[in-house]
Length: 224
Image 1: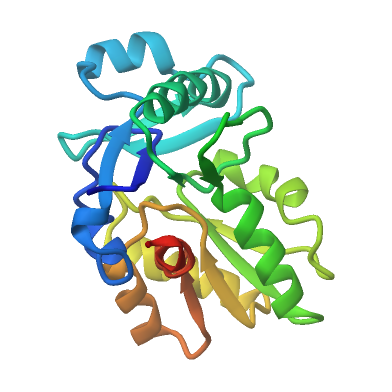
Image 2 (image 1 turned 30 degrees about the vertical axis):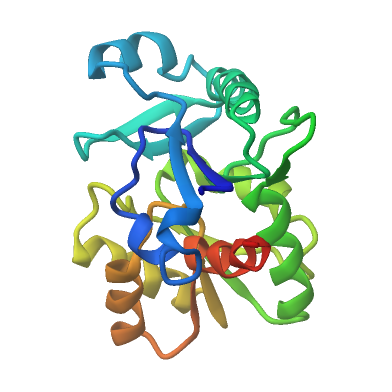
């Protein structure tokens, strides 16, 4: 019986992420949900596109297409979906997004949010070393300062989409943060996968951390 619900801000199932999760969490222990489940591409664009000046989140639709989403609309959608998931009796809800959210809550289930786990862990691990961050969109770079405020050094950042970016795009972004002094790189989106990790580790000689693998290793400890 599934006890862990994964929740993407895009559409489930996240076939690009599930193979990584299954290395740490049994397949039959998980059920998959998405904020945008059941919506057409046109409905997603109409209801969830970012407004002018709104923070941008990036996710994947079931078609494989990239979706650029407004964070306030997605946060409201997450709250509705979390309520529905809890009503189905899941003990653990794993959020498949590294974006910052401030009002998410549950009544009974354990809600595991990457934006509360990964920055705290890496800030303590990195010490006085320089962290490089890859994000999907250029607009997200300026938002990293508040999210990673606990680091002793301001992070260096570059953008490459895990959904539409090519191998060349991803490696170029990795080389950019390395040239800015990065001692390690975090792929700060759940959409980056083992292919992106392999491209970067082949091109660079510094550690590269995959967010979804990092989180799956933690959440796997909660499987009964």
